Length: 90
Image 1 (cartoon, one colour):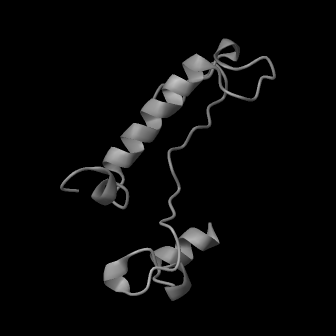
Image 2 (tube, rainbow, N blue to C red):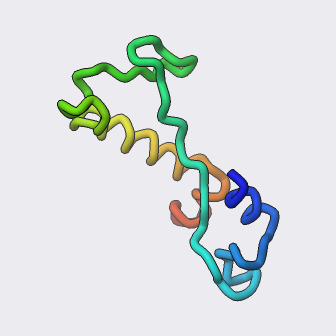
């Protein structure tokens, strides 16, 4: 949390923008919110079923990977700090 806040606040050691000076760090971001309480839907409807995960119950199986990929794509398209480098024409 503090690292991302410091970059947002313009800490020179965390500069990722060549227009702002020497690049000293990669761009940092929160990313999409992936947590959900199993089959209890979040306000946006996201759920996670046991059969979406590998046998260890932690790592995503193919169905969960597809969900995560869609959420990452949406994040990169919509987040104001991500879309400027992700989308052509920002």
